[in-house]
Image 1 (cartoon, one colour):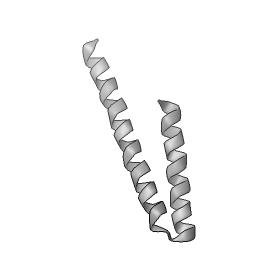
Image 2 (image 1 turned 45 degrees about the vertical axis):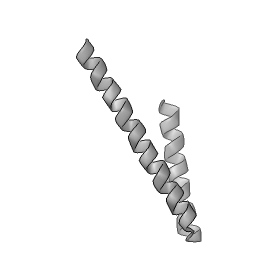
Image 3 (image 1 turned 90 degrees about the horizontal axis):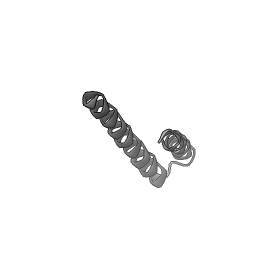
Image 4 (image 1 turned 90 degrees about the vertical axis):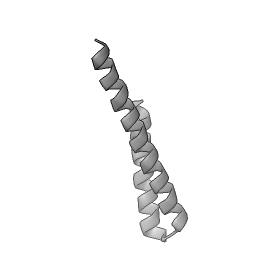
Length: 56
């Protein structure tokens, strides 16, 4: 799961750089999508870790 977060972070940064360079709305939408998707994944991982602590 960690490699997926790193990959999403890199893709988000590249999309933002692409947006700054080209001014394209598509790249901004892509960066926003990746950022939201990454935050949701991090929240899922955090919730799973919290649930695992309560089970012990």
